Amino acid sequence: MENISSKMPLSDIRNLLETISDACDQFQMVSLNRQMEAARALLSENPPIDVAVLGQFKAGKSSF
Image 1 (cartoon, rainbow, N blue to C red):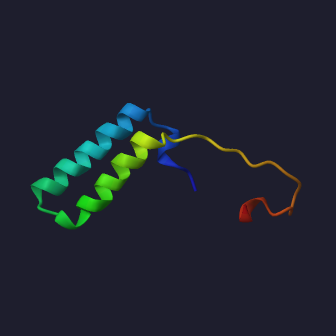
Image 2: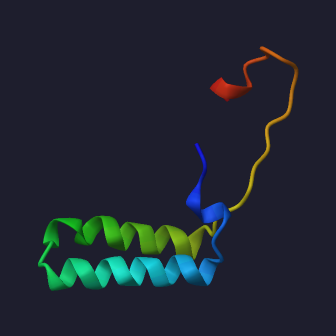
Image 3: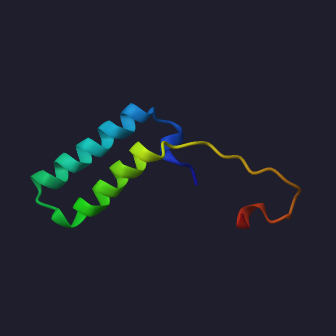
């Protein structure tokens, strides 16, 4: 599964969150307020990083 953040600059991800937040406000989707705040907080505290797991075939990498 591919992560969208690996192809987008951080500023674009922030803009996307803002667009989603605006749509939630416009359509009064208050049930998503907490999730949107959590997403913003995670993005500001822990910007996305790329991680590679290397190892031998059938050595448990996918369960890592």
